Length: 302
Image (cartoon, rainbow, N blue to C red; front, top):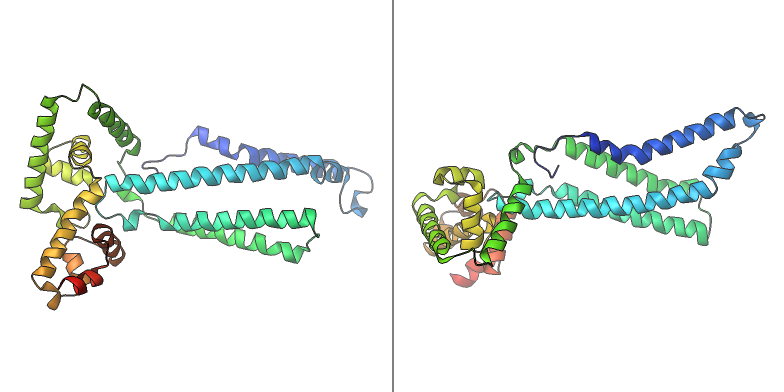
């Protein structure tokens, strides 16, 4: 969900290897125990009691807990890295932030900790009945269904063609160049020219009024590569693409408020005219740049 143009490859099957191995292990136990005399009169067979309910079972539970912690940590890292990187591509990110993934990860974290606590109670205090343990299974199932349905119906077509990894390499390269002798006066002059060109373009064409504006579209209008435009914005202005565009939008909102536009149009209406595409984004960005909500700003300034 957070990787553009992701395709399931051969290496990805390795993630399923522990689960497949465990299923085969349990099938072997069942087949072996089922062929022992008197199996039909017992609740558990020989291997079930000695292996699955013994040392092998304890090892499997410990392995499962470690596996969940690692996948949870990697998933959180992927999500927050993605959320940071989309700000270098899109001027409005609210619909692309995939907050439902964040919600799922938080829910899963709570369920994981609840499961650890439940296991501690069973081992150290008292054996819980199946009904008492059932709630953990029930809510875990709901969490899995939730992410399955949300993931299936999430449209990620806007991410197609974006190479987050390439952008990261370009940014790292630019950081090295900026702090070295290689970043000469000639290059500084070229960067200043590009900054001036970009500023003039922003003032004359006002591309920020397009709520769906992204780095690719703006680079095409300027006849620059995405890497070049990103460099001018990141190094030249010291901002990511999202903040750079929203600076113009917020300034336009302020100008409209000074002109008394709020007397004929709601704050949300002004926000839409200035290039924002949602109330949540507008309120969040406005507070980030002014340290106050739009309503507070209006009441205190006019």
